[in-house]
Amino acid sequence: MALENKLGITDSASLARAEEKISKQKALKFFETGYLDSLTPGTFQTLAAIHKYLFEDIYDFAGKIREVNMAKGNFRFAPLMYLQAALDNIDKMPQTNFDEIIEKYVEMNIVHPFREGNGRSTRIWLDLILKKEIGKVVDWSRVDKEDYLLAMERSPIRDIEIKHILKNALTSDINSREVYMKGIDTSYYYEGYTAFEIKDLK
Image (cartoon, rainbow, N blue to C red; front, side):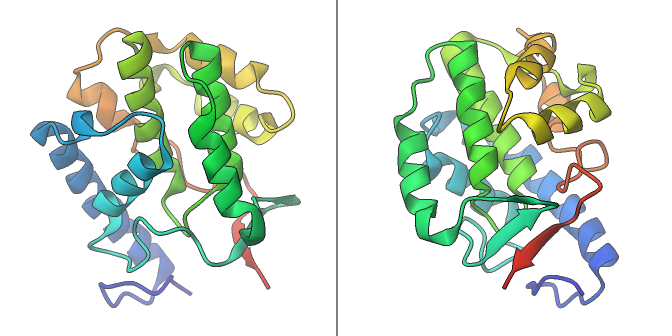
């Protein structure tokens, strides 16, 4: 079953295709208008603005904190009762160097604040922080998909792997449209990022 959406699509595969097309169009517009660079890097308010912009034509919940508990395999994302506190703590985390920025990215991934579209939104959010703080962004075309997926799965316990992978993919080409768009290529970094499906918990 597909998530409830504004497009009236009931098939999950059809929704995924429509979602990818629309969110890519919105992401490109986001980049080309310069609006993205006007946002404050590293805050949940900015992440919510990114998510809303990408998905507001598809979902009513765009930019809104999820209202269901969610899990991936045996890993449970932050429970609803702690979600706002977790986001407040992430806002306060330092972001003055690469290691601090990736630690913040990992924490946001653990929180998984939105019902859908977390991966794309959070990668744009990450690159905005990197761009503003250290003058770099991730060239996602230089990141091996399987290495990334496994490192992200293990990152709540051990973040050294994801730091190594992303550090080796940094580029100073911060204004490249191609580099930016690779970060939201869902065929390369699908939202579930493991064989385990992200699911709602009753």
